[in-house]
Image 1 (cartoon, rainbow, N blue to C red):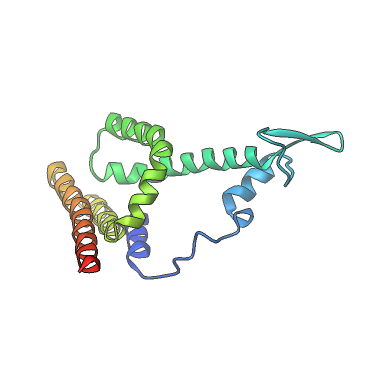
Image 2 (image 1 turned 60 degrees about the horizontal axis):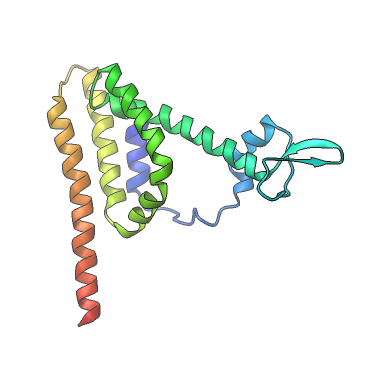
Length: 177
């Protein structure tokens, strides 16, 4: 159900102004600040500083805690999606571990790709809907082979990338004319 809901949220047009949010109001940052006493002032590249004789965490440390909590949330969130493709616990565990280890280093590339590839986000939304529907169907006894599920996922994702690249090339050609 969560995957289908995420799919609908991704595919529905909405407020795209997420980049200008005040991160001090972010629930993960608030939770991090509740875990440890902190200050709003940076102290160079230090995680901790002394304020009025009390050791407090700097915003740099709060950022690190928030990042790690986000990794945990991502790992827990992606488990149902992987189970939508396979029922092997080894594959689910290893794919999540590799995803967590690689995502942080790939984040910059992925965020740039998401802005350059116009149709990637809708393709991901369709994939989420498909996986969610597949899992609901399996609960009621409908069986979709893993090979078919992977084929559908690969087709939509590669199709989203291909359509985005084609449209970008057309726009560049029209701009040069």
